[in-house]
Amino acid sequence: MDVRSLFAAQKYAAQRPATEPQPNADSAAARLRGAAEDFATTLNEAETTATAAMTGDADPHALVQALAQSELAVETVVALRNKVVEAYQEILRMPV
Image (cartoon, rainbow, N blue to C red):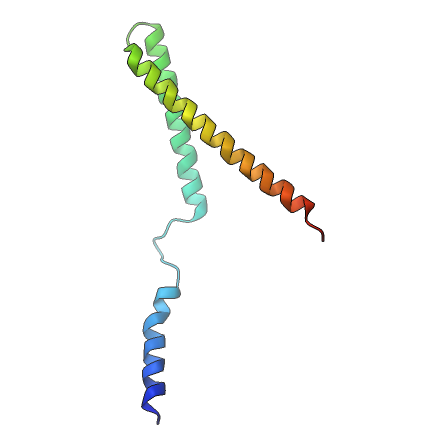
């Protein structure tokens, strides 16, 4: 029996688990769901702050900060949507 081939088989067996998916790794769907929940939370917080500012219960600086955060969140979602639409249109243009 060749010792080198035995060592190679052992090394291969030791490296094999590194190529298997991790059981606790988040899937893309879970990460997308989390991002959507964060987006909704940001918009709800901005709306709550705006309502409180209209009644005089919130600091104007807090209102400006909440509006800036919601604007950034909306711009990010719009940019992401545009990239998805662009990728879809590119797929449609592919010859079959």
